Length: 84
Image 1 (cartoon, rainbow, N blue to C red):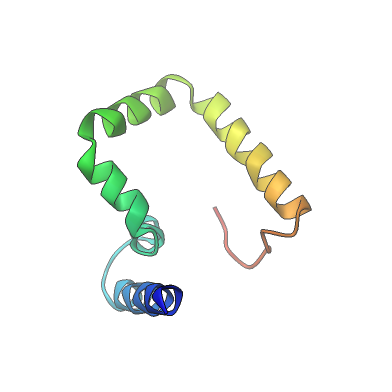
Image 2: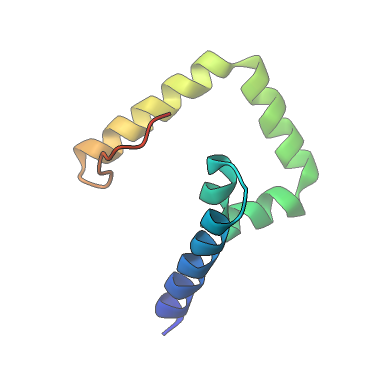
């Protein structure tokens, strides 16, 4: 039951974010409440994460692409018309 409630809640949040004037980065985060909670609850961690990204943007993006490819190769990521 918790999974169904969580799924329904994410769907509701996603629909709400589409109906308001928010950017795609906000719509994505709306579907990840645990991530948003972590970012909000631990400001020092969030700051450190942002600083690490700024200092090593290329490395971070390379790592993200490696993880994306691994997920796609394992069938856990489906390509669509999303750009970016």
